[in-house]
Amino acid sequence: MYKILFAEFIAPNVKKFKIEAPKIAKKRKAGQFAIIRVDETGERVPLTIADSNIEEGSITIIAQGVGKTTKQLNELETGDFISDVVGPLGKPSHIEKFGVAVSIGGGVGTAIAYPTAVALKQAGNYTISIIGGRSKEFVILEKEMKDVCDEVYVTTDDGSYGYHGFVTQKLKDLIDAKRQIDFVLAIGPISMMKAVAEVTRKLKINTMVSLNPIMVDGTGMCGGCRATVDNKTVFVCVDGPEFDAHKVDFEILERRNRNYREDEELALKNFAKKIHEPVLVEEGSKENN
Image (tube, rainbow, N blue to C red; front, side, top):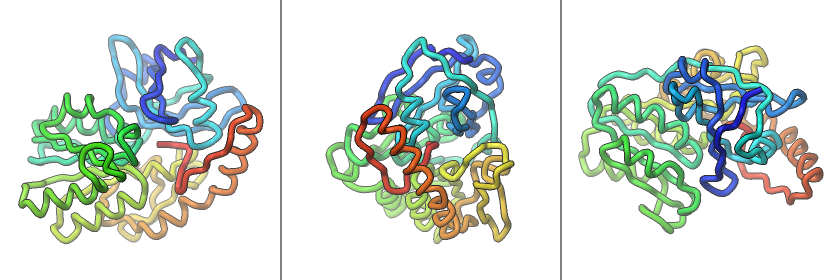
């Protein structure tokens, strides 16, 4: 059992957990994830490790309650316990001194972009962060990003805060302004990562994306996270989760991401009946962030 040292909502349906897991905290690196199981009968869900504290022996995860398991997880509070936490899993982010490095987080994808932004800054890069949300209340980790990045730009779809538009539009503005950009990391909805790849492709800017939205069991055993990268089949959870954005077949990725949608909606509806909550299914949502 793994004790929840701290839990709080940081946006609607988005909750941050600090979990006691000293061995994972000691070994984890930027870009890696953990598998959690809320209770002994629950499903395994991969969630990126947003941060860790070796002295405290804790890891931080951020979960968006869009499916049955993440909603169940988000009902837990400080002092509660999670049945299982396994990690760190996946390959760490490739970190080096690129020059000017841009980290882009769409929605809860900011939780995944954050640890890599920290590592990029520690490697001596000039770091820029572009984070976005549907509206102001959905923007997360702005303060944390400002603490580690040289520049931070916030975008909202509705213009309620920061730049009115998508993260991709802000990236394009920087490029059009002839800003030097040597590396881009984009994490968020598949459609967003695809759009970023198209923006940077023509200029051949080194661009990486995290394909964790399609991960299922996190060990490569189920085969549910197969993707096509550079015309080869990869398993995102063991070969990634980060890949060269310009080599990812996003069309196949989007189709595969829809494979479990009906099962996810059914599980969510059954869970909602138990807690007497209305069902709100987000387009393109997945259990993991």
